Amino acid sequence: MSVVTEAGTGGGEGRRPVTGRGGGVRQSWRDSLIVARRNLIRMTRIPEIVLFGLIQPVMFVVLFTYVFGGSLKVGGSTSAADYRNFLMAGIFAQTVTFATAGAGAGIAEDMHKGLIDRFRALPMARGAVLTGRTLADLVQTALTVIVLAAVALLLGWRVGTDGDTDAFRVAAGFGLLMLCGYAFTWIGALIGLSVRSPEAATNGGLIWLFPVTFISNAFVDPSNMTPWLRHIAEWNPFSAIVQACRVLWANPGQSVSDAWPMRHPVWASLVYSVAIIVIFRTLSVRKYRSATV
Amino acid sequence: MPGAIRAEGLVKTFGDVRALDGVDLDVPEGTVLGLLGPNGAGKTTAVRCLTTLLRPDAGNAVVAGIDVLEDPDAVRHSIGLSGQFAAVDEYLTGRENLVMVGRLYQMGRRDAKARAAELLEQFHLTDAADRITKNYSGGMRRRLDLAAALVVRPPVMFMDEPTTGLDPRNRLQLWDVIKDLVSGGTTLLLTTQYLEEADHLAHDIAVVDHGRVIARGTSDELKARTGGERVEVIVRARELMPQAAAVLTRFGVGELATEDHTRRLTVPVSGGPKLLAEVIRELDSRGIELDDVGLRRPTLDDVFLSLTGHMAEATAAEEGSA
Ligand SMILES: Nc1ncnc2c1ncn2[C@@H]1O[C@H](COP(=O)(O)OP(=O)(O)OP(=O)(O)O)[C@@H](O)[C@H]1O
Ligand SMILES: [Mg+2]
Image (cartoon, each protein chain N blue to C red):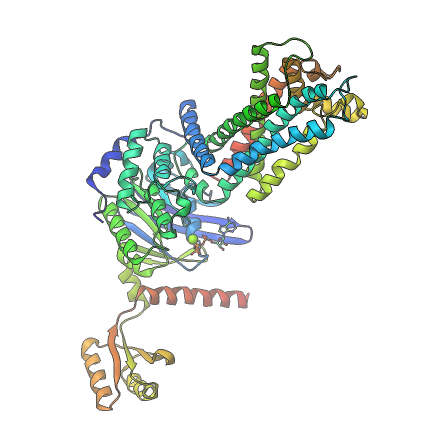
């Protein structure tokens, strides 16, 4: 082996750092995209994960529609079609929040394989390993939502069944869903950074989602809950996004309540999502760095 | 002094374990320091502290002229690290791994690609370059990891047991790579279990045990400390051992060591080749047939065993009296 070749100096140009230090919004964004790309490549190499991520919500829709569809009612109506149109916002919201578990498991896996030491010893932006992962999860979530929307349409879901809507409002609903899902992946990131194994991250990332998604307006009307539970449900960020989708898509079963998030669900969803991102990103990045210098 | 590594009084504890207990290191620019020590001595912990991965509880360190605790980001621009366990993404190909690392060192896309191709060639991974690394053999993954550490040709390199798991041919080739790097001015801190490797590559050696540097010096200095030359004979048959022992004791200046199953007898001597000739004549005149005979100088293995052995006894004694 004729060791270090002359051409080896070819890398010399690039050796000079683009920016001086591990800061700067531009570098942060650039490094995050590089890490996101890495995670997306991984997804194409392990398509099972993406596939299971797709099957799960589809299964939920089918089960809820056919098992509960006959017996649950929404508003005064007992029609299966009304329940289906009511249900979909909840299923969509649940689907995007369940991406949390994937983000957590992925980050925990990175942390517990030596790879994280490589990243940490590189002159890269501080939050890029985490931001890159959450961006990649956003892509996966978008893919899942598209497939789910197609299945839902096949099963008879329609927008504008309880009032008027338009393309812009429908798109806005999906946009809010993505934002909310993105916010939740930061909660997953913190869980992934806090546990001792990837398995724990998968479980820990899922367990708390059940109360969050069920103590809400997603599958039943909170007005039938005991008062204290109803308050939780109405102020639950998850309920806000579900309500926002129902309002924007003009689907039935919109909660009638004095609670602010129920009266202004779009604003509430935005505020909640941004707050979650700011809080959990800060905590996660701090945690990621705490073991470093 | 850019390019150098200097650590003073590094302390790192994990619960009750004092992984580092006041480590001082000094690696002049352009030289190689070999860090030797038994399992659990604190070698990896020292490397992790110097490469900004761990924050020491006490002490300070300067790498490439930059204070590690004050400006870790700047340090990261100037170092390459190959950790004890290969740190590559198993679902990326070898090439994708190297390009990613180059990009994260803030190289442009084209430069990163060119450099990756070069390194793949250099580490004989071109054939496997576009396969995911999950299916690489252990040695291939190790080589890829080393390549990743060399992406930007940093002025200061850290390699934690770089040749563990490499076959002899690849180990020799890696030694060449390392020698080449160092002749180009790179400063290297290398940990290893292969004393031969330290002997071969390192200008200076530091032996660590229980988180402390218990000896340092060049390989020759350390060997001289451990003792002088010895005569070693292997007799043809086990029955000959007592007779041979009697002869060797007469010529020796220290305690005779015997090893029954290999029929090996060793005794410290002073007198060099002339004495060896006398020993051989004497053995021959008594009809003691030999399989092998020679004058041996201490190896780094001997240094290592004697140093870390004493250390273990000393601490045991301390604990016993406490
Ligand atoms: N993250 C950690 N948590 C707890 N203990 C640790 C941690 N890292 C290292 N140690 C302990 O610190 C001591 C030194 O470990 P270190 O890995 O530095 O040894 P080493 O010299 O590299 O050993 P080896 O030759 O086996 O690689 C050991 O007792 C080890 O158990
Ligand atoms: Mg080690």
